[in-house]
Image (cartoon, rainbow, N blue to C red):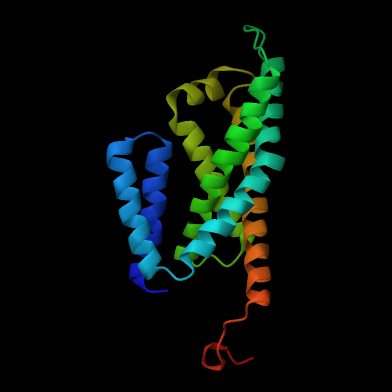
Length: 200
């Protein structure tokens, strides 16, 4: 991939993350996203497949691992917190599993898959570690969530590793799922020409 393709893919990632963190409002963020996507579509190899496989892998791993895992971790924090009575509802649980796990998980894994493509990370484990670090960074950047990590439950020495392990399981699963789907699609639609094949 050319430097233009790598830069364009990373540009999409940056704009998406700024939109998720509400640093960019929709008036500026959405046109900027459309612009970066246009460049990435033009210069990044297999851009839409990378986006689609990352998104699907993230939704699957988010609903099965990150959402339920974060919900369970929140319950552990509540049990360890003697000073506050934290209430849990079915609606709140569904929001965590679907909203955080499915929707946010899909968006972040899409970004993670673009990072993997742009930086040529060959291992789904390595890409999963990067994605997990991205998830934890986003959690800790938020001042309200950061305060809860440090002040509730067992404190940062228990809360951060507990949520980090869940994020790691989600990240590796999302990237492995995206990689598997990409291999399956390549097997169904072989487009590698003889000149592109690497000699054994």
